Picture 1 (cartoon, rainbow, N blue to C red):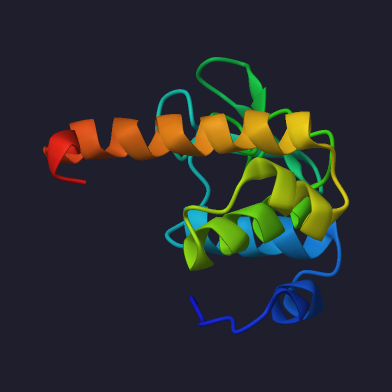
Picture 2 (cartoon, rainbow, N blue to C red):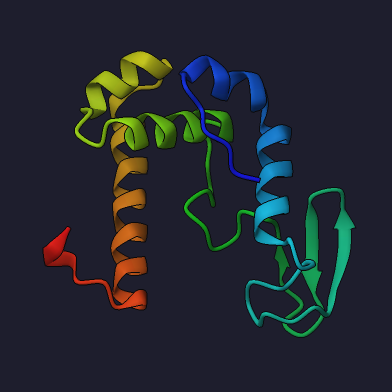
Length: 133
């Protein structure tokens, strides 16, 4: 499922649009079947191609619900590019990322904050000492 990307062009080739990003996220998040992000239940109903309903809570959700991609307005393809750029060079400035992606710096900065919070939350949940990283 995961593959090594050598360049931003490789990312753009595999993820040319938001649908390709959503397909990837669905394959990764729901590899064992669709589950409600609210209850972890498999009791879900498909509302449309990308929207589901949790039968227990009656809440609608998509693959991006309760993730760093929730509420993305500048497109998932851009978020994938940001993630790749930071994975290659974690010291890359938000200004440089903005230049490489064509996004404004504030958008990049806000998403980088989400990434940092998610990484820190994951370290806390897995017991990894934040001071050692």
